Each structure stands twice: as C-alpha cells, then as structure tokens.
Image (cartoon, rainbow, N blue to C red; front, side, top):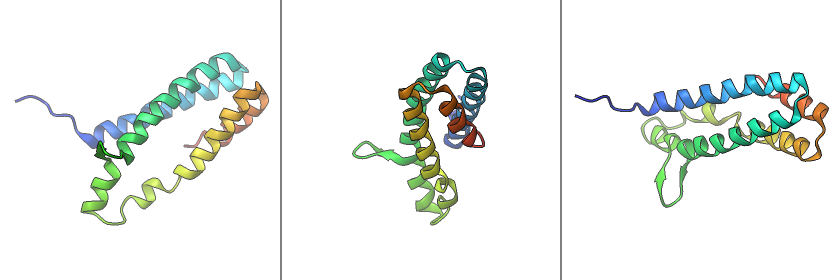
Length: 116
C-alpha cells in the first residue's frame, strides 16, 4: 500500500511555506535589503498564485478545495476566506512599494501584514 497525498495536509503545508517566507521577508525588511526582499517576494507571489488556484480552482480545469468543502459543509469556507481581500490589498501595497524602491515603505507595508 502506497501513501496517498492528503489534500488538507498539502494545503496546510502551503500555508507553512507562506508563513516561513513571511518571516524571511520580515527579516529582509528589517535589514533594509530591498533587492533580496524583492527576489523572495517574487518567488512567494508565484507560490501564492499556485496556492490560490488550489484553493479556488481554475475555471474549466477543476474546482478547488473551497468548492469541495462548500459542497459538503455549506458556509464553512467563509471564515477561511475572510482575510483574503485584506491580504491581497496589502500585497498590492507591497508590490507598489517595491516598484518605487522605497525600502521604508516596503518595511512598513510588510510589518502591517506579518500576522498573516
């Protein structure tokens, strides 16, 4: 018998990747290393896009974890998704700060979202 991947374990581990990268980004912001911050931020954004596709699904390709949960337990995903708009807004601010190269702004924006 071979081990089968557990969808919820994969999603949980995905959040651990995000938390770990967030800690690393926090340290880079503290150090004022905008170049390293920008490089890690770019990698994290690629991961978060994939992670979001797993959560939300991809139209025409498959449903995501949230749809599966909703089909079995209506209303259960609302708390899981409730902070996504705020996180996306903060990510936008960080992206804008990186474009301008304002390390102080990057640090401020990141510290506001390091509880995610």
